[in-house]
Amino acid sequence: MATGEIEVLASSLTIINRADVLPLDSNHVNTEEARLKYRYLDLRRPEMAQRLKTRAKITSLVRRFMDDHGFLDIETPMLTKATPEGARDYLVPSRVHKGKFYALPQSPQLFKQLLMMSGFDRYYQIVKCFRDEDLRADRQPEFTQIDVETSFMTAPQVREVMEALVRHLWLEVKGVDLGDFPVMTFAEAERRYGSDKPDLRNPMELTDVADLLKSVEICSICRSGERSERPCCRSACSGWRIADP
Image (tube, rainbow, N blue to C red; front, side, top):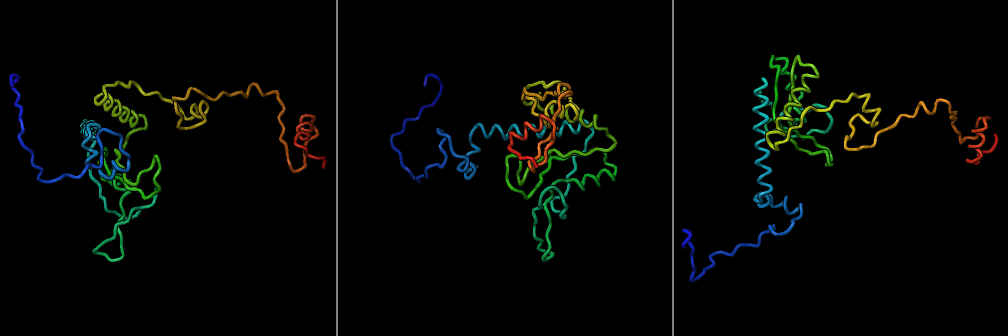
């Protein structure tokens, strides 16, 4: 062709082997069940492929950041003994020791504490954890976490490193500078939101009206027949149809 491209004109077509109809249609929205069943086809979609590439990039960035801050990447055992934590253990039967089982770790907690005792004062690991519990929106039987343990670091120092890691990831992956993280004390969170993990997107805050009620008499109402002789209580009890004892 004049453009330099090659165009092939077929004079005949022979079908050697018929292919089955693909279970996923790239032109329509497929159900989650179908996507999970045929995951190898679902991962061909550009959206899913990009997510895997982003995950790989984040993993690489985390390792470089932690290495630069003096942390050592140490792998801990996957087959261990059962330890009581927040959920049940997944058990793996032993072929060598009949009737005995290994347990998959819910977290590397014990191993990383042993590392601290051994003199490795800054440890991290991108590790798989296993917890045999009911599936919920915030619960998975198998999940990956960035596990970190340090010695001789104060709480503000730990928070400083972790916040720097999060800011670094957002800047490198999304090009977003998060800036300094807002800090709120436990007392302030309870006073303003009534929770130790408030949703700051909610503009509604609690209002303390204790000063407005200092001069107001508030008495309890008992449905058992006992009531106060105060006028406010007698009126309230009448409303509840509580008879005189």
